[in-house]
Length: 131
Image 1 (cartoon, one colour):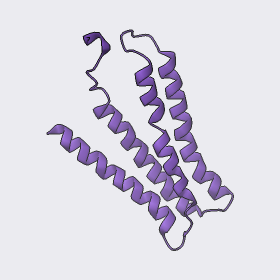
Image 2 (cartoon, rainbow, N blue to C red; image 1 turned 90 degrees about the vertical axis):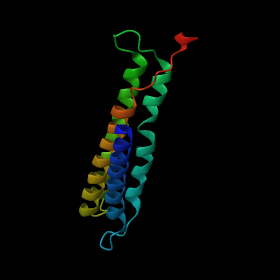
Image 3 (cartoon, rainbow, N blue to C red; image 1 turned 90 degrees about the horizontal axis):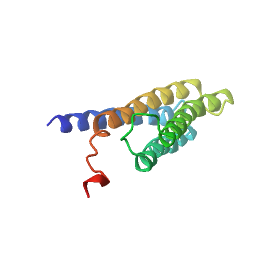
């Protein structure tokens, strides 16, 4: 039952983050849909972790180069998602109010992605040593 509550909480926070993003685009005083390009960063951010989890094993406690590279790439993707609205606002493509709403949406969405990996990421019981 705890897994269902966590899943409902994560889906609610994801919907809240997307609402902030869409408000930054669709409100009448903003009216520009350029900030929707951060959706690409939402899709790309978990991919390095998924690839790195298949690449290395967790048997040793030392750092894994594949996992470190995945963390580096994920950090770059997240920083890019926060930088894109700022650049668009500095170039006056979008308003600063829209930039603030997109930043709030980014914060909520990336915390939701982090929460998903913290709650559901450690339950991989499959290992090739079972065979």
